[in-house]
Each structure stands twice: as structure tokens, then as C-alpha cells.
Length: 254
Image (cartoon, rainbow, N blue to C red; front, side, top):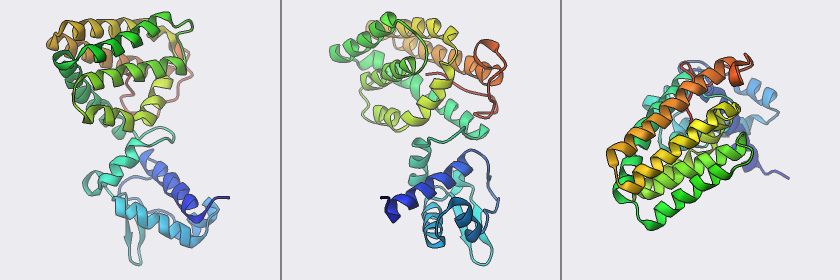
């Protein structure tokens, strides 16, 4: 049976998702605690405790006699807010937040690839080679199996960089990262080019070519973003079944 702490965490997650998805934006007023409690099937004390935690993270402001207002968490958010973003597992991110994530990946992962070419050792190179070999042997290159291989490849690049923080960041973003990739790989047409580019990046890292490694990583990310935006708008292979809402410009690969 769930305890009060577990129920409070569920409420925190639910309200976070309403804000991170853009359902409520900065300056918007949340429903009164009584209404939230009724709609969420929780007691008012639990809802109040959840809102206090969200206020501590910088996601909302509790204003005396004025209720709870969504804060501009980009200005007021704490480190706990960053952790919430990293572990976000709800629906789509708001367009601005989604685009910010994509931009961050370009800066972060191109430098990771450059450092991997400069610093990788035999063990790190062998790990990258194993992932690429598994990609080539994959019998059904589609769906979550490809997502998992893609994450392993990028995580292996982060480990090869020699920077201890980079793989931790990759791990922290894994949930939201895989949600994006599952949508990207819903179209199997993209898989051969992604795997080809992974092979190109492996070759650059093996040769110690820093500029080529960074340029290839940028090519991987740009190919992914371009195609995920297409998939989100039209559905896999232009079927017209895609759901827009993960981003205003729409998305990225791995």
C-alpha cells in the first residue's frame, strides 16, 4: 500500500508534467488547492505539501491570498528543477523546452565527440566498436531496440571523452531522451543513415581526428532533428499520423 510520501511524489510528478508540457505557463494561476485535491483524488494536506515542494524547486510561487502561480522557472528554478527536467517522463515537452534540449545537445555532444577522439583509450574504443557491430547485426532495425542501441552508442562516446560528468548527464537525461528516440525510430527509414553515421564517428574517434569527430556528431544530430520534425508533423514515412507537440520546430535524434 502506498504511503503518504509516495502519494505526494505522484502529485508532484503530475503537476510538474502539467507545467513542463506547457499546459500551464509562467504567470498562470493553478486551480485552488480544494479543486486540485478533488481532481487528483487526494487530500488537501497532501496537495499542499506537493505544492510546497514545487515552490522549493522554483516551479511555482505560493502567494498569500492569491493562490499558486506558475513561476518562470528559467529564472527562479533551483538544481532540483534541473533534476525534474532530466527525469521528466510525461507527455511532450513544451515547444520552447523541447527546442532548448536540442540546442543543448549540439553544444554538449559535439564537444564530447571531439574529446573522445583526443582521449579515448583501447577499452573505450572497443566499447564503441561493440555497439556499432551490434547495430550492423540487428535483424529488425526499428523500435525500442534501436533506441537502446542509440543510447548505448552516445553513452559510450561520453565515456570515451574522459570527462566524468558527461556520462552522468547522459544517464540523467535517459528517460526523456528515450521518449524522443522512440518517436524518431517509429520510422525505420532513418535507421540505415543513423547507423552509417555512427560508423563514420567511430572511424574518426579511432583515428584520433578531433575535428572530423565533432563534425560527424553534428551531422548525426542535424539529421536526427530534421527527420524527427518531419515524423512529428506527418507521422512515420509521411503517413500524416504524427502528433505535433514535442516542439515548435520539432525534434532530434540521438
